[in-house]
Length: 479
Ligand code: NAD
Image (cartoon, rainbow, N blue to C red; front, side):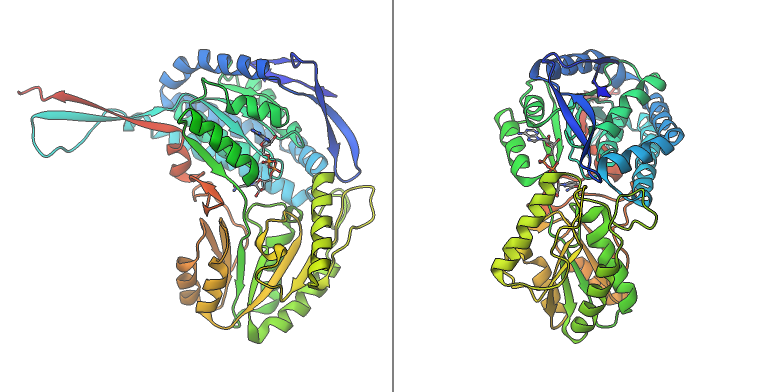
């Protein structure tokens, strides 16, 4: 299978003729080749989007809502095949692949609902302090937007950008990750099936050069990027050269705080979910465990046991709880951190080894009493590697949690709801979960502070990110 580029409503080979291999991480086998968009292809995609923009952005938003609902319905109709594809290309266990597809459906449905309300928000009169003038607010689309996504939640991350962008009236050029482009390319099939006007959505798979071509294209109105801090910085630098607005969803090293009043068995479930879902390849992975001193040994013992029993396998195997690392490079990165842990003399309570292949598997891993200056405590590993430290009281827990370059997410586990709310308010994070793990609705915001990025996705904030405000001010008619 060789997949192509989706530009101006049709499939095309890459002008360069270059294709990239795509793998199944559970076996290490190549499963497809995908055309790699060149700078010339990116330009064709941007021109197609520009041609589509006037009609799409001026359409009643209620009509755009109809297309978003059709996206949701079509993803649902194809969900069986999409789930299989997600398992095959990403290595996610079935229940996680199912959640991804449900999330994408919910996101398109949610932004359809928000789009329905947009027509009533055009030309709304502003209350002014005198009656000399009248002023009206319009909320307009930004134009042609460049969307760049990583490989850890393919389709989900794209839906979080694409649905609000299309709802706002933008036309999009979307670059999937070179590692997991297959499911995102299905969006082209879906766009055709629902009769989306040509050029409104363009898909330009490819690697770093394709992303760089999109980032430097002079006719892009905004860049919305999800990925690593290293690339995020390059995107921001390129955007700064043209004073372009940019949204960045970057890395994390999120804390999970367990207080002594917690039910330990339940805490183990949430802690493991926070570090083992998607084999820890989550920007929001709660990879820094902070546990109250009096229960630390008991929790560590239960965690080490539960991690050693966790079924790590190909997603198609019955009972699979955790799949492989999604790429060989990511496997090597995690193994490199095991070597660093050894050099640093960290105390390993479980894991810290690769598992037999042929796929790219590692054992879920726990290090206890990790020094605060350890590289494993400070750096985003993006694998199932949990590091733990103890705290003495609430203030100490908050201090240690906030002593971090990132500020994306956090989890608080405590039987005392008032205390949990107080701690959540004090934590530096864009999203805090209390007595739960990684629960995300399209209605709540996503994004972080510090090195975790700029801006918010999802909710009404995700829509505003693709809109610009205009005011029209005129002398009052009676004057
Ligand atoms: P990455 O930065 O390597 O790649 C992300 C995307 O950028 C890919 O599509 C890639 O091809 C493209 N790219 C690479 N070089 C580029 C360049 N020079 N110009 C433009 N585009 C370029 O990240 P990754 O390894 O795919 O993803 C993992 C990272 O993503 C982790 O750091 C993770 O925390 C982060 N992430 C963040 C969120 C969030 O919401 N904050 C969500 C998911 C992943």
